[in-house]
Amino acid sequence: MNKPKVAAEEYIQFLVASPAAVSGTEAARVHAGPLVAHDAYTRLLHRLEPDAAALWQEAQGLVTPATGVLVLDDTTLDKPYAHHMGLVTRHWSGKHHAVVQGINLLTLLWSDGQALVPVDYRLYDKATDELTKNDHFQLLLHAARQRGIAPRCVLFDSWYASLANLKQVRALGWSWLTRLKRNRRVNPDGQGLRPLHDCALAAGGQRVWLQGYGFVRVFRFAAPDGGTEDAEYWASSDPDLPEEQRAPLAALAWGIEHYHRGLKQCCGVEKAQVRAARAQRNHIGCALRAFLRLEAQRLRTGRSWYEAKKQLLREAIRTYLANPVYILQQATA
Image 1 (cartoon, one colour):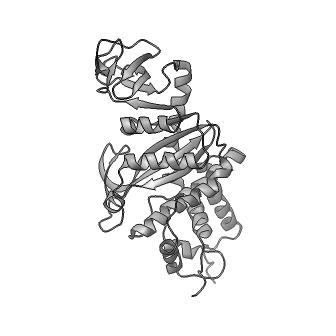
Image 2 (spheres, rainbow, N blue to C red; image 1 turned 180 degrees about the horizontal axis):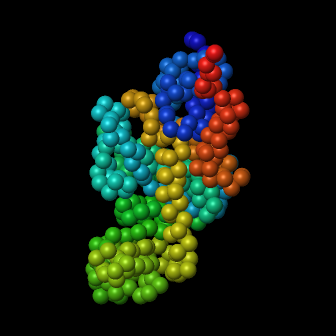
Image 3 (cartoon, rainbow, N blue to C red; image 1 turned 90 degrees about the horizontal axis):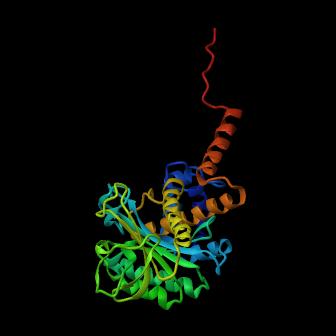
């Protein structure tokens, strides 16, 4: 068997450096060293074994396991023109506020308030593995526990706030903070269960009995117009958690939105021009590893992911300006 002409690290570095185009053809055009055909990169994405463990091997050096929080959420990778591409199904998109065609990516992110480190991920593909998003949620947390991560808190959106998930976090010995939908039934005063939106909760949060779970603390935040229809509810597994501790924890939950934006804008995660599910899985895995490299340099230098990408482009432009090629030829007399 012939030795592979390109390795995963070369593709990852291509994703770090490429300002826009992400394809085997473009990667071959800028390949450092002996010329290679674009098929070398296509074969790479089919040859690699899709495995999230490779991400953890690189991420663990950026993580302090006994501190920080874990944040879990999903995002939809837009694939509006994909008609015969693996993993593509219909998903809700927060960006478009509609159901769109794409690939659903779930990420488990570790953060200490400064670092945003993806430590694990899953791709939603129920037709193949028969796993729901809630199944992935629990598997991601189990894997984190096995790796020795012991977070201060687990943060997630109301979509993942099912009783099974809440109890799973508790069974792992961790606390959680999440948002609850307004129709979740609680007993705030011993007078019986009723929906959250029918409860007059105390300012600063209130200890209530959550149906099927036990005592939690719920915080209510009125809608901007003061109405109750769009009021927001946060809940913590710690019945005594004060608002001054809830607020900074809730702020950490937004870190995963910044991560999603950086992954899409700086690492080309949505842009792979391949159809096979295996190739898509490997491209997405490499894109997350490319993000790790940008995040590691941000933590070292303070330079944002976006500034780091611009700096690479500036260096390329500076090199060209030192020896420009596209010049007008002087006409001869």
